Image (tube, rainbow, N blue to C red; front, side):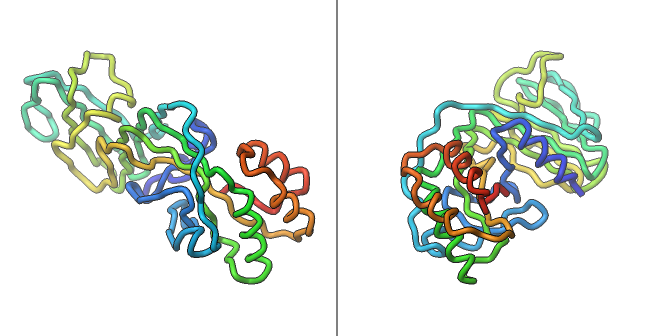
Amino acid sequence: MVDINELVDACMDGTPKMRPVLPLGQALSIGSVGFLEDHAFRYVGTVETLLGKSAGSPLPSEGLISFNASSEDGFSHRIYASGETSETFGSIVGANGAIELSFSTESAFMLSAKDVAITTMGDPAALLAEMLKRYKAGAWEKRYCFVYQVGTAAAYTATLSRQSGAKLLLSVDTSLGQGNFSVADVAAGAHLTHQSGALDQIIGAKNIPAFYNAYRVKDRFFRRDIVKTASALPTDASPGAISEALELTETPFELV
């Protein structure tokens, strides 16, 4: 199966420490509550239903990022020009050319996200304090986390191999110049033409949550002043300021 650890590490290194949304295509929003199981987010509810507090209005994105990654081993590609015939699928390529993606191992992956807008919960401090309060009262499971930041991709393509030798043939909306291909080219304007082998995939999806960040409780002894610190933070505090203030009191919270 896919090397999920390599995929997650690549995403966290190439984005502002954000995880990929798994399973692919799962609906996820700020305030979602769930737990991680082999890096997959298992949804259980919202902060409204489980913490009794609103997620509030998110802070707007301050810019767009693009991110592309593929596994170090097992992934390759080939460009077909218009009129050529795919050796794998035997089909004639259309006017703009096509891209064939090959996964020689069952652990290979490819991910491409274009123009990712990152939105952040406006006031996570109150929710952190409530999460800790309920955890100490036995009303919140340690494995639970709540999403405070989401990266929505304007265009998103991701493929996770489940079988050695799996292949995809993708048509594209714009002409591909020979030798100019990069993984970024398959984020937008790509359409699935043929598939061989077992794959999990999203091809050319628009405005989809692709990445996220979430907080959960650390398993440690909690001091009363930690809750006070979380509650006393200003409502317009940035995520960085929140993290710094909580670290000063040996924060019981951590990013998942």
